[in-house]
Length: 188
Ligand code: GRF
Image (cartoon, rainbow, N blue to C red):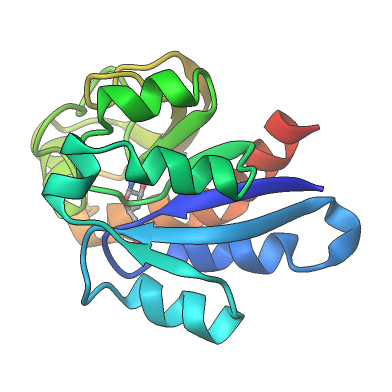
């Protein structure tokens, strides 16, 4: 059985999608832990409903101790999946899980990435730039936001009339369609 931990800060629709995808035992993958920096994050409710343990981290613990890495090692985590996690991953965690932390970014990196580029900020920037396409980027995580080695990208067309909200909907669909499969392929 391969074990994954999901880190999320918000609604957790990607986390839910991943949980549902791997729910059947024959997948050989289990979501063992959900970690959030936001005690009010809806992803915590999703974890509870799915019967998956969750952990809320505060800045001091996350950045100034190895407690998070120790818990992940205790759970025999094989892959850490960031799905809308807004904090930068600390060095100690990257060193403890080399090439075992991945993130999904709702744009075609290296464009429209980096600090502050999350959620609607990304789609507004894409529309303002009059891009003809956008997409998702699944990548390994290193010490800088959105700069790790790319694993895969999937694109969608952007019409001139598309609002940032329409773009967000197209991107969300790509996330639902491709993220769980990318995780499965990485683990097998
Ligand atoms: C998604 O757009 C993902 O690409 C980005 O953060 C968002 C998470 O949304 N990393 P949700 O919390 O999974 O609904």
